[in-house]
Image (cartoon, rainbow, N blue to C red):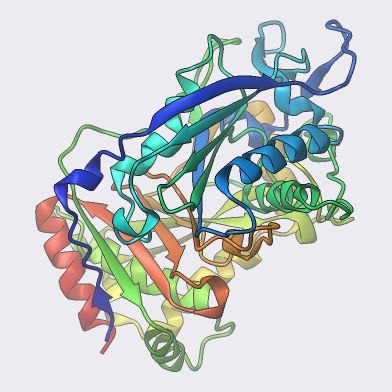
Length: 447
Protein backbone atom coordinates (compact mmCIF):
# COMPACT_ATOMS: atom_id res chain seq x y z
CA UNK A 1 0.00 0.00 0.00
CA UNK A 2 1.18 3.51 -0.77
CA UNK A 3 3.88 4.18 -3.30
CA UNK A 4 7.02 6.26 -3.44
CA UNK A 5 6.87 8.77 -6.28
CA UNK A 6 9.66 8.35 -8.82
CA UNK A 7 10.32 10.96 -11.49
CA UNK A 8 13.74 10.66 -13.16
CA UNK A 9 14.81 13.94 -14.74
CA UNK A 10 16.94 14.43 -17.80
CA UNK A 11 19.58 17.02 -16.82
CA UNK A 12 18.45 19.38 -19.60
CA UNK A 13 15.07 20.11 -18.04
CA UNK A 14 16.65 21.44 -14.88
CA UNK A 15 16.99 24.61 -16.95
CA UNK A 16 13.88 25.49 -18.96
CA UNK A 17 15.84 28.18 -20.85
CA UNK A 18 13.07 30.71 -20.44
CA UNK A 19 13.37 33.88 -22.51
CA UNK A 20 11.56 37.04 -21.37
CA UNK A 21 9.91 38.67 -24.36
CA UNK A 22 8.08 41.52 -22.68
CA UNK A 23 7.61 43.01 -19.20
CA UNK A 24 5.00 45.61 -18.41
CA UNK A 25 2.80 46.98 -15.66
CA UNK A 26 -0.99 46.85 -15.65
CA UNK A 27 -2.79 49.63 -13.81
CA UNK A 28 -6.28 49.88 -12.36
CA UNK A 29 -8.48 52.72 -13.53
CA UNK A 30 -9.05 54.04 -9.99
CA UNK A 31 -7.97 57.51 -8.88
CA UNK A 32 -6.04 57.46 -5.62
CA UNK A 33 -5.77 59.89 -2.74
CA UNK A 34 -2.39 58.91 -1.30
CA UNK A 35 -3.34 60.04 2.21
CA UNK A 36 -6.57 58.06 2.52
CA UNK A 37 -6.01 54.86 0.64
CA UNK A 38 -4.19 52.58 3.05
CA UNK A 39 -5.90 49.23 3.40
CA UNK A 40 -6.18 47.71 6.86
CA UNK A 41 -4.62 44.25 7.19
CA UNK A 42 -5.90 41.88 9.87
CA UNK A 43 -3.69 40.25 12.48
CA UNK A 44 -3.84 37.07 10.39
CA UNK A 45 -2.56 38.96 7.34
CA UNK A 46 0.20 40.66 9.36
CA UNK A 47 2.36 37.52 9.75
CA UNK A 48 2.08 36.44 6.11
CA UNK A 49 4.39 38.94 4.40
CA UNK A 50 5.93 36.61 1.83
CA UNK A 51 5.21 35.73 -1.78
CA UNK A 52 3.44 32.55 -2.87
CA UNK A 53 4.12 31.35 -6.40
CA UNK A 54 1.82 29.02 -8.28
CA UNK A 55 2.12 27.57 -11.79
CA UNK A 56 -0.81 26.41 -13.90
CA UNK A 57 0.04 24.26 -16.94
CA UNK A 58 -2.24 24.20 -19.98
CA UNK A 59 -1.87 21.84 -22.96
CA UNK A 60 -1.98 23.32 -26.43
CA UNK A 61 -5.37 24.41 -27.75
CA UNK A 62 -5.36 25.14 -31.52
CA UNK A 63 -8.21 27.64 -31.04
CA UNK A 64 -6.15 29.60 -28.53
CA UNK A 65 -2.49 29.89 -29.50
CA UNK A 66 -0.18 31.39 -26.86
CA UNK A 67 -0.47 34.95 -28.22
CA UNK A 68 -4.28 34.74 -27.87
CA UNK A 69 -3.96 33.42 -24.32
CA UNK A 70 -1.63 36.31 -23.45
CA UNK A 71 -4.03 38.89 -24.90
CA UNK A 72 -7.05 37.47 -23.08
CA UNK A 73 -5.26 37.15 -19.75
CA UNK A 74 -3.93 40.69 -19.93
CA UNK A 75 -7.39 42.02 -20.75
CA UNK A 76 -8.98 39.90 -18.02
CA UNK A 77 -6.51 41.11 -15.41
CA UNK A 78 -7.30 44.70 -16.34
CA UNK A 79 -11.02 44.02 -15.90
CA UNK A 80 -10.78 42.19 -12.57
CA UNK A 81 -8.83 45.07 -11.05
CA UNK A 82 -12.14 46.92 -10.90
CA UNK A 83 -12.85 44.78 -7.83
CA UNK A 84 -9.24 44.06 -6.83
CA UNK A 85 -7.93 47.62 -7.03
CA UNK A 86 -5.47 46.95 -4.18
CA UNK A 87 -3.49 44.57 -6.41
CA UNK A 88 -1.48 47.38 -7.96
CA UNK A 89 -0.69 48.93 -4.58
CA UNK A 90 2.39 48.32 -2.46
CA UNK A 91 3.00 47.00 1.02
CA UNK A 92 4.20 49.53 3.58
CA UNK A 93 4.87 49.62 7.32
CA UNK A 94 2.96 52.20 9.34
CA UNK A 95 5.64 53.01 11.90
CA UNK A 96 3.16 54.80 14.16
CA UNK A 97 0.97 51.74 14.63
CA UNK A 98 3.60 49.09 13.94
CA UNK A 99 1.28 47.48 11.38
CA UNK A 100 1.67 46.51 7.75
CA UNK A 101 -0.77 48.15 5.36
CA UNK A 102 -1.44 48.10 1.63
CA UNK A 103 -1.04 51.51 0.08
CA UNK A 104 -3.38 51.79 -2.91
CA UNK A 105 -1.03 53.94 -4.94
CA UNK A 106 -1.70 52.52 -8.40
CA UNK A 107 1.89 51.52 -9.11
CA UNK A 108 0.85 48.51 -11.16
CA UNK A 109 0.64 44.73 -11.39
CA UNK A 110 3.52 43.03 -13.16
CA UNK A 111 2.78 41.22 -16.43
CA UNK A 112 5.52 39.19 -18.11
CA UNK A 113 5.44 37.34 -21.46
CA UNK A 114 8.03 34.60 -21.91
CA UNK A 115 8.80 31.49 -23.94
CA UNK A 116 10.78 28.28 -23.77
CA UNK A 117 12.03 26.00 -26.54
CA UNK A 118 10.83 22.92 -24.67
CA UNK A 119 7.62 21.03 -25.28
CA UNK A 120 5.29 20.80 -22.27
CA UNK A 121 5.63 17.01 -22.36
CA UNK A 122 9.43 17.28 -22.16
CA UNK A 123 9.69 18.95 -18.77
CA UNK A 124 8.92 15.86 -16.70
CA UNK A 125 6.12 14.83 -14.40
CA UNK A 126 4.30 18.01 -13.38
CA UNK A 127 3.54 16.62 -9.92
CA UNK A 128 7.21 16.63 -8.99
CA UNK A 129 8.25 20.12 -7.79
CA UNK A 130 11.07 20.68 -10.24
CA UNK A 131 13.21 23.67 -9.11
CA UNK A 132 13.25 24.74 -12.77
CA UNK A 133 9.58 25.74 -12.38
CA UNK A 134 10.88 28.82 -10.55
CA UNK A 135 11.79 30.17 -13.98
CA UNK A 136 8.09 30.27 -14.83
CA UNK A 137 7.45 33.03 -12.31
CA UNK A 138 10.49 34.33 -10.40
CA UNK A 139 12.21 35.79 -13.46
CA UNK A 140 9.35 38.23 -13.75
CA UNK A 141 9.94 39.71 -10.31
CA UNK A 142 13.45 40.69 -11.30
CA UNK A 143 12.14 42.85 -14.11
CA UNK A 144 10.65 45.53 -11.86
CA UNK A 145 12.36 48.17 -9.78
CA UNK A 146 10.02 47.89 -6.80
CA UNK A 147 8.12 44.92 -5.35
CA UNK A 148 4.68 44.46 -6.95
CA UNK A 149 2.18 42.59 -4.80
CA UNK A 150 1.17 40.56 -7.85
CA UNK A 151 3.15 39.46 -10.92
CA UNK A 152 1.68 37.32 -13.71
CA UNK A 153 3.95 35.51 -16.15
CA UNK A 154 2.69 33.66 -19.23
CA UNK A 155 5.28 31.28 -20.69
CA UNK A 156 4.63 29.56 -24.01
CA UNK A 157 6.00 26.12 -24.86
CA UNK A 158 7.15 25.02 -28.29
CA UNK A 159 4.07 22.79 -28.61
CA UNK A 160 1.67 25.70 -28.08
CA UNK A 161 0.97 24.90 -24.44
CA UNK A 162 1.34 27.62 -21.84
CA UNK A 163 2.25 27.99 -18.18
CA UNK A 164 0.47 30.67 -16.19
CA UNK A 165 2.76 31.63 -13.31
CA UNK A 166 1.36 33.89 -10.60
CA UNK A 167 3.26 35.38 -7.69
CA UNK A 168 1.20 37.13 -5.02
CA UNK A 169 2.10 38.38 -1.59
CA UNK A 170 0.31 36.14 0.92
CA UNK A 171 -1.21 39.20 2.61
CA UNK A 172 -3.53 39.43 -0.41
CA UNK A 173 -5.11 35.98 -0.43
CA UNK A 174 -5.48 32.69 1.35
CA UNK A 175 -6.14 29.56 -0.70
CA UNK A 176 -9.90 30.08 -0.91
CA UNK A 177 -9.74 33.75 -1.92
CA UNK A 178 -6.93 32.99 -4.39
CA UNK A 179 -9.13 30.40 -6.10
CA UNK A 180 -11.92 32.99 -6.33
CA UNK A 181 -9.41 35.40 -7.87
CA UNK A 182 -8.45 32.78 -10.47
CA UNK A 183 -12.11 32.06 -11.21
CA UNK A 184 -12.72 35.75 -11.80
CA UNK A 185 -9.69 36.01 -14.12
CA UNK A 186 -10.94 32.93 -15.99
CA UNK A 187 -14.48 34.31 -16.29
CA UNK A 188 -13.23 37.64 -17.64
CA UNK A 189 -11.13 35.78 -20.21
CA UNK A 190 -14.40 34.82 -21.91
CA UNK A 191 -16.26 37.31 -24.06
CA UNK A 192 -19.54 37.43 -22.16
CA UNK A 193 -19.27 35.89 -18.69
CA UNK A 194 -20.02 37.75 -15.44
CA UNK A 195 -17.76 37.74 -12.41
CA UNK A 196 -17.78 34.41 -10.57
CA UNK A 197 -17.95 36.20 -7.22
CA UNK A 198 -17.40 39.85 -6.35
CA UNK A 199 -14.78 39.79 -3.57
CA UNK A 200 -15.58 41.08 -0.10
CA UNK A 201 -12.67 43.44 0.61
CA UNK A 202 -13.67 44.53 4.13
CA UNK A 203 -10.74 43.19 6.15
CA UNK A 204 -11.97 44.93 9.28
CA UNK A 205 -14.40 42.04 9.60
CA UNK A 206 -11.40 40.27 11.15
CA UNK A 207 -10.16 43.19 13.23
CA UNK A 208 -9.36 42.56 16.87
CA UNK A 209 -11.93 43.51 19.48
CA UNK A 210 -11.42 46.68 21.50
CA UNK A 211 -10.15 46.04 24.05
CA UNK A 212 -8.64 42.67 23.04
CA UNK A 213 -10.09 39.67 24.88
CA UNK A 214 -7.68 36.72 24.89
CA UNK A 215 -9.83 34.02 26.46
CA UNK A 216 -7.72 30.95 25.61
CA UNK A 217 -4.08 30.04 26.20
CA UNK A 218 -3.23 29.46 22.51
CA UNK A 219 -0.25 27.10 22.81
CA UNK A 220 -0.24 26.97 19.00
CA UNK A 221 1.08 30.56 18.90
CA UNK A 222 4.57 31.79 19.80
CA UNK A 223 5.08 35.23 21.34
CA UNK A 224 7.75 37.54 19.93
CA UNK A 225 9.17 40.59 21.63
CA UNK A 226 9.69 43.12 18.85
CA UNK A 227 9.91 46.92 18.98
CA UNK A 228 6.98 48.74 17.37
CA UNK A 229 7.63 49.09 13.64
CA UNK A 230 9.83 45.99 13.36
CA UNK A 231 8.57 43.26 11.04
CA UNK A 232 8.33 39.68 12.38
CA UNK A 233 10.55 37.04 10.77
CA UNK A 234 8.98 34.79 8.11
CA UNK A 235 6.70 32.03 9.39
CA UNK A 236 8.61 28.71 9.48
CA UNK A 237 11.77 30.32 8.22
CA UNK A 238 13.88 27.83 6.26
CA UNK A 239 17.26 26.58 7.44
CA UNK A 240 20.38 25.59 5.54
CA UNK A 241 20.17 22.02 6.81
CA UNK A 242 20.75 19.30 4.22
CA UNK A 243 17.47 17.49 3.61
CA UNK A 244 16.30 14.45 1.69
CA UNK A 245 13.13 15.04 -0.31
CA UNK A 246 10.53 12.44 -1.25
CA UNK A 247 6.94 12.26 -2.41
CA UNK A 248 4.68 9.57 -0.96
CA UNK A 249 1.56 8.82 -3.02
CA UNK A 250 -1.65 7.64 -1.39
CA UNK A 251 -4.15 6.15 -3.81
CA UNK A 252 -7.93 6.15 -3.28
CA UNK A 253 -7.53 2.54 -2.09
CA UNK A 254 -4.97 3.66 0.50
CA UNK A 255 -7.28 6.41 1.70
CA UNK A 256 -10.19 4.00 2.03
CA UNK A 257 -7.94 1.65 4.01
CA UNK A 258 -6.99 4.47 6.41
CA UNK A 259 -10.66 5.32 6.84
CA UNK A 260 -11.43 1.68 7.64
CA UNK A 261 -8.66 1.71 10.27
CA UNK A 262 -10.34 4.79 11.79
CA UNK A 263 -13.80 3.22 11.72
CA UNK A 264 -14.65 4.15 15.32
CA UNK A 265 -13.40 7.75 15.02
CA UNK A 266 -15.85 10.62 15.52
CA UNK A 267 -15.36 12.25 12.12
CA UNK A 268 -13.73 10.34 9.29
CA UNK A 269 -12.56 12.50 6.38
CA UNK A 270 -9.72 12.12 3.92
CA UNK A 271 -7.87 15.08 5.44
CA UNK A 272 -8.29 13.85 9.01
CA UNK A 273 -6.97 10.35 8.34
CA UNK A 274 -4.05 11.57 6.17
CA UNK A 275 -3.09 14.17 8.78
CA UNK A 276 -3.23 11.59 11.58
CA UNK A 277 -1.13 9.14 9.55
CA UNK A 278 1.52 11.76 8.71
CA UNK A 279 1.60 13.09 12.27
CA UNK A 280 2.25 9.65 13.70
CA UNK A 281 5.09 8.96 11.23
CA UNK A 282 6.68 12.40 11.62
CA UNK A 283 6.59 12.38 15.42
CA UNK A 284 8.05 8.89 15.73
CA UNK A 285 10.81 9.55 13.19
CA UNK A 286 12.15 12.50 15.22
CA UNK A 287 15.85 12.07 16.05
CA UNK A 288 16.57 12.45 19.75
CA UNK A 289 18.98 10.93 22.22
CA UNK A 290 16.33 11.21 24.93
CA UNK A 291 13.36 8.94 25.40
CA UNK A 292 11.19 9.81 22.43
CA UNK A 293 8.12 8.19 24.01
CA UNK A 294 7.82 10.93 26.61
CA UNK A 295 8.15 13.76 24.10
CA UNK A 296 5.01 15.76 23.27
CA UNK A 297 4.49 16.25 19.54
CA UNK A 298 2.37 19.11 18.17
CA UNK A 299 1.00 19.13 14.63
CA UNK A 300 -0.41 22.30 13.08
CA UNK A 301 -2.91 22.59 10.23
CA UNK A 302 -5.02 25.39 8.77
CA UNK A 303 -8.75 25.80 9.36
CA UNK A 304 -10.96 28.11 7.29
CA UNK A 305 -12.84 30.27 9.79
CA UNK A 306 -15.31 31.78 7.29
CA UNK A 307 -18.17 29.43 8.25
CA UNK A 308 -17.15 29.24 11.93
CA UNK A 309 -17.65 32.89 12.88
CA UNK A 310 -20.92 34.37 14.13
CA UNK A 311 -22.14 35.74 11.81
CA UNK A 312 -20.19 33.78 9.19
CA UNK A 313 -17.81 35.65 6.91
CA UNK A 314 -18.93 35.88 3.27
CA UNK A 315 -17.53 33.01 1.21
CA UNK A 316 -16.02 35.68 -1.03
CA UNK A 317 -14.06 37.31 1.82
CA UNK A 318 -10.81 38.44 0.22
CA UNK A 319 -7.82 38.08 2.47
CA UNK A 320 -6.60 35.49 4.93
CA UNK A 321 -9.41 33.83 6.86
CA UNK A 322 -7.54 30.76 8.09
CA UNK A 323 -6.15 30.10 11.54
CA UNK A 324 -3.83 27.40 12.78
CA UNK A 325 -5.45 24.48 14.55
CA UNK A 326 -3.32 22.08 16.55
CA UNK A 327 -3.31 18.60 18.02
CA UNK A 328 -0.82 17.36 20.62
CA UNK A 329 0.03 14.00 22.13
CA UNK A 330 2.91 12.09 23.68
CA UNK A 331 4.84 9.99 21.21
CA UNK A 332 4.03 6.93 23.32
CA UNK A 333 0.33 7.51 22.67
CA UNK A 334 0.89 8.11 18.97
CA UNK A 335 2.69 4.79 18.78
CA UNK A 336 0.43 2.68 21.01
CA UNK A 337 -3.10 4.10 20.71
CA UNK A 338 -5.53 2.89 18.04
CA UNK A 339 -5.43 4.92 14.85
CA UNK A 340 -9.01 6.10 15.47
CA UNK A 341 -7.85 7.90 18.65
CA UNK A 342 -5.23 9.84 16.69
CA UNK A 343 -7.84 10.79 14.09
CA UNK A 344 -10.06 12.02 16.95
CA UNK A 345 -7.27 14.30 18.19
CA UNK A 346 -7.02 15.86 14.72
CA UNK A 347 -10.80 16.25 14.58
CA UNK A 348 -10.90 17.85 18.04
CA UNK A 349 -8.19 20.30 17.02
CA UNK A 350 -10.32 21.60 14.17
CA UNK A 351 -13.52 21.56 16.27
CA UNK A 352 -11.74 23.78 18.82
CA UNK A 353 -11.85 26.60 16.25
CA UNK A 354 -15.17 28.13 17.32
CA UNK A 355 -16.14 31.78 16.88
CA UNK A 356 -14.85 32.65 20.36
CA UNK A 357 -11.60 30.72 19.90
CA UNK A 358 -10.95 32.39 16.54
CA UNK A 359 -11.70 35.86 17.94
CA UNK A 360 -9.42 35.12 20.89
CA UNK A 361 -6.61 34.11 18.51
CA UNK A 362 -7.06 37.33 16.52
CA UNK A 363 -7.02 39.35 19.74
CA UNK A 364 -3.89 37.44 20.82
CA UNK A 365 -2.22 38.81 17.70
CA UNK A 366 -3.17 42.33 18.80
CA UNK A 367 -1.43 41.86 22.15
CA UNK A 368 1.59 39.84 21.00
CA UNK A 369 3.76 39.82 17.89
CA UNK A 370 4.03 36.16 16.99
CA UNK A 371 3.20 33.31 14.70
CA UNK A 372 2.23 29.59 14.65
CA UNK A 373 4.26 27.38 16.97
CA UNK A 374 4.50 23.61 16.63
CA UNK A 375 6.72 20.72 15.60
CA UNK A 376 5.58 20.99 11.99
CA UNK A 377 2.76 22.26 9.80
CA UNK A 378 0.69 20.32 7.29
CA UNK A 379 -0.20 22.63 4.40
CA UNK A 380 -2.90 21.21 2.13
CA UNK A 381 -3.46 22.15 -1.51
CA UNK A 382 -5.21 18.83 -2.00
CA UNK A 383 -8.88 19.85 -2.19
CA UNK A 384 -8.40 23.47 -3.22
CA UNK A 385 -9.37 22.73 -6.82
CA UNK A 386 -7.12 25.19 -8.64
CA UNK A 387 -7.05 22.83 -11.63
CA UNK A 388 -10.86 22.86 -11.82
CA UNK A 389 -10.98 26.52 -12.92
CA UNK A 390 -12.28 26.71 -16.50
CA UNK A 391 -10.61 29.13 -18.94
CA UNK A 392 -11.62 29.63 -22.59
CA UNK A 393 -8.70 27.36 -23.58
CA UNK A 394 -9.68 24.69 -21.03
CA UNK A 395 -8.76 23.59 -17.53
CA UNK A 396 -5.14 23.36 -16.38
CA UNK A 397 -3.51 19.98 -16.80
CA UNK A 398 -2.06 20.59 -13.36
CA UNK A 399 -1.82 23.47 -10.87
CA UNK A 400 0.66 23.60 -8.03
CA UNK A 401 2.65 25.98 -5.85
CA UNK A 402 6.35 26.36 -6.48
CA UNK A 403 7.88 25.10 -3.24
CA UNK A 404 11.20 24.86 -1.48
CA UNK A 405 12.07 21.89 0.69
CA UNK A 406 11.37 22.60 4.38
CA UNK A 407 11.45 19.97 7.14
CA UNK A 408 8.89 21.87 9.23
CA UNK A 409 6.25 21.96 6.47
CA UNK A 410 4.71 18.85 4.88
CA UNK A 411 2.63 19.54 1.79
CA UNK A 412 -0.42 17.73 0.44
CA UNK A 413 -0.87 18.00 -3.34
CA UNK A 414 -3.54 16.47 -5.58
CA UNK A 415 -2.72 13.96 -8.26
CA UNK A 416 -3.01 15.04 -11.88
CA UNK A 417 -6.74 14.96 -12.50
CA UNK A 418 -7.55 17.04 -9.43
CA UNK A 419 -10.40 16.21 -7.07
CA UNK A 420 -11.82 13.62 -9.47
CA UNK A 421 -8.72 11.43 -9.00
CA UNK A 422 -9.10 11.47 -5.18
CA UNK A 423 -5.50 10.43 -4.54
CA UNK A 424 -3.03 12.62 -2.68
CA UNK A 425 0.71 13.21 -2.86
CA UNK A 426 2.57 13.88 0.40
CA UNK A 427 5.72 16.01 -0.04
CA UNK A 428 8.23 15.49 2.76
CA UNK A 429 11.71 16.94 3.37
CA UNK A 430 13.73 15.57 6.30
CA UNK A 431 17.34 14.91 7.32
CA UNK A 432 18.56 11.57 5.97
CA UNK A 433 18.13 9.37 9.06
CA UNK A 434 14.74 10.85 9.88
CA UNK A 435 13.60 10.29 6.30
CA UNK A 436 14.60 6.62 6.47
CA UNK A 437 12.53 6.12 9.61
CA UNK A 438 9.62 8.19 8.28
CA UNK A 439 9.50 6.08 5.12
CA UNK A 440 9.56 2.82 7.10
CA UNK A 441 6.77 3.99 9.40
CA UNK A 442 4.72 5.44 6.52
CA UNK A 443 4.32 2.00 4.96
CA UNK A 444 4.24 0.07 8.22
CA UNK A 445 1.27 2.02 9.54
CA UNK A 446 -0.53 1.57 6.23
CA UNK A 447 -0.73 -2.19 6.76
